[in-house]
Image (cartoon, rainbow, N blue to C red):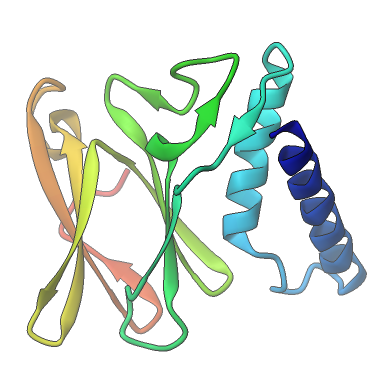
Length: 155
């Protein structure tokens, strides 16, 4: 497992070096950066061994090829920290389309079809929706014109 983390780190370093050589162009993969940061956090805490398991899922968020990706931090594992990626209000959930990414604190998520629209439902701690932390609410997110659209109040 440690070899897999090291190989992932080398791959991320090569990607970062390529992005720098290209003048910081939009060649950087946000999903790889998210996973790399999680791996580094794990490694820096008692030399933990990181496993992304099935945290990265291909989904269609915007109805445009190619498929997009969700990164569900609840699926990350670190051998030296049982709760490194989640707290009492949930875990990080990232949506990536091309070189852009959005993040939510989520207690769960689900993709649904509503006619021709793809909707990301994000279960949120009630504090995000005008309630208290022990309550749960759901934020609906759709993508249009390259932007994430939702009725939720701004963070």
